[in-house]
Image (cartoon, rainbow, N blue to C red; front, side, top):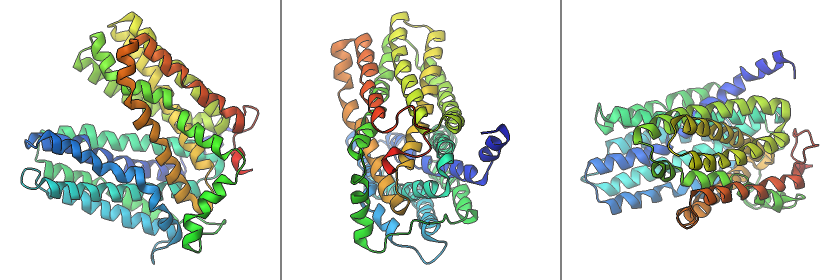
Length: 415
């Protein structure tokens, strides 16, 4: 693609929309996790109650259950996607304000209810944003659009996490949550000015078409089960390694300041840069080849932790490993998101994409749960070697449906 054409795509309205909607998706996540935990801890809430608050995040895992409703029905304003998007964003903004107005010390269960409303509306927003992005972007634009979405998502997380913690030292948490609610306004304004995507493939006309047909259509494809296996395994090595990196850094002797500065701050910039670089590269390589290249880089970067374990407490070595690992992770995540979008049928986008992203979270919970035991029994060198090797099956599965020889512009599963 000529350089002028690439720049035209990069600075298009569609890419701007993808980035802003990514910001709107990432912002609410930490408002019900780390920021809320900090608030409740400051208020002296029992650790058992704080631990139970993690359950308010269940809607993110179960969102595929109501995604068919958002595929099947259309609100009487703004269109099928924009109508639901505006409703979920407006409700989310009000729920964040309600959460900030609640009192954890006097009524922690009211806080839990408000937080549950935030996650429900946030998960609903995610469903519609994923569907909108798939329908708004051409197949050739999915790579860059997904990378900009991921970049916006991480910026939103940083605003809610880093920004929220800083503001909490300067003002009451109620005011922090009010400010975070106002940060939803760019997403709402983007929804208002963006066009409704076309639906040339039609829409579900009954509950059966919305609930049953997306699964029937998907599993009727050649290699459908192999694709699900790939989604489970592609980032499993990277995920397992990430689960133990903080104990690893501390065990090597790095200070909290060094971890905060290099891993959290510099690392966040590196992963955002990786997403942007990955998006541009996908324009030239296509999604399939990008999955190969970025997947290999992910595996090699995981092996970098073995090198760091050998070197020991070295700030330059830590910086180099974090730069390589986070750049690779950012590129891999962008290709991963683009691939999942590319294999959805536009008639059932919300349901199929919600199912795939829910499935994507399984390794993060199950595979990561045993990493502490593995690291303790194996030692750091062998643990990170296992994390590197476990990435290989996911790469080999690409041979089945995304061979290097294909151009990557269309998923083989939808041929």
